[in-house]
Amino acid sequence: MPEQIRYVIGIDGGGTKTDALIVGLDGAIVADCHAGPSHLQIAGIQGAADVLFECVRECCEKAGCPPEGLQNIVLGIAGAGRGVDRAELVNAMLATGLKKKFPLKNILVETDARIALEAALAGKPGIVIIAGTGSIALYRTESGNLLRAGGWGRVLGDEGGGFAIARDALNAVMRQHDGRSEKTLLTPKALAHFGVSSSDELISKVILDRIEIASFAPKVFEAVVER
Amino acid sequence: MPEQIRYVIGIDGGGTKTDALIVGLDGAIVADCHAGPSHLQIAGIQGAADVLFECVRECCEKAGCPPEGLQNIVLGIAGAGRGVDRAELVNAMLATGLKKKFPLKNILVETDARIALEAALAGKPGIVIIAGTGSIALYRTESGNLLRAGGWGRVLGDEGGGFAIARDALNAVMRQHDGRSEKTLLTPKALAHFGVSSSDELISKVILDRIEIASFAPKVFEAVVER
Image 1 (cartoon, helix red, strand yellow):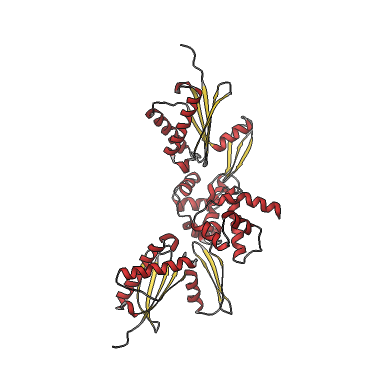
Image 2 (cartoon, one colour; image 1 turned 90 degrees about the vertical axis):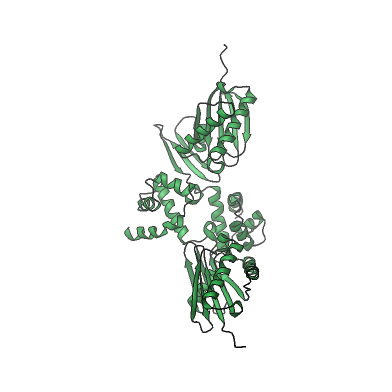
């Protein structure tokens, strides 16, 4: 029996989308595939497992690789900060694989921050800071220890992330509206961005319709430049 | 036909409970009644209308007052900041009254902040500040105008309210946890309050179980005194 060609799959799963690559052991990319959100807190464990399993199967199909040809599956998943959740995700993917007659093995789940660290520094010591909708910093010391700051979510932390920036900007709009602050460039920008004609309408839209606040962050940077 | 004895009902409706009083035109309290939440954003328009209608009917029963004996019904309802919502609440109460053969009239809806202002100042100029779970300030000027600051909800405002205080305290706990801040008295208090044994468990409880954060505010005051 000839020796099997072997592959590795790497997946980056977040709150908006999931990207997967299958590569040979020489590092050459053989195929990619894309899917919807697999953020653990958004999709749930089983929801994420379903999305991720289908990504793996699709990569294997494109590469002509049977399940036993997979050397490793490495997942960097947003919202996977707790060990217990990571273990449950592995179990759910193993169970799904057995059920769908495409058995998986050697599944390693990390946070999305951890895979960013590895991608940026290739095992060397250093710090990555991710500032998207949320924020987190991850540091590998000279001795290889991993240290973390932030990433505690939009209520208790995520300082400097897009949600926090947009929320603080809209607070400034509220303070102009009720007379506690000077006029701000942010007010016309917020009205235009959220498609309303007055601060009163903005309040209804933001508070009652639970609109996605973080989307306003890029306009805050615009205002800083224009000021 | 003898002249009807006439009554006025006043209701204070919030996110936790609803309190109603029925008084004679001389101001003497005849009866009271109590019900669950009638906060407009929490109970919804029809849900609030049902709670409030039953309060009115119960007051009238206790006072032996038929619906036509009611001179006025004045409602101070949390979450009723928008005129369009107040009008819908009146309409829903009128419709409920007709359906239940207990027709109402002369319904006046105000915010809970406005009735606090009237209760505290009896029509004179002045400021009330409400700092509960949220926060708002309301000011009647010498010329009788009403001005407002704050009350924009837990995401965009409500500075100094119980939710904001507890959230900022838990952010300090997170900063101690990941090494960004000094040790804080708030950490043991938060662990005890939320019934967990470590900051890691606290994070799971607060972020994933969406626990009521504002309940921690009184312990923050304790910590200030003990420091």
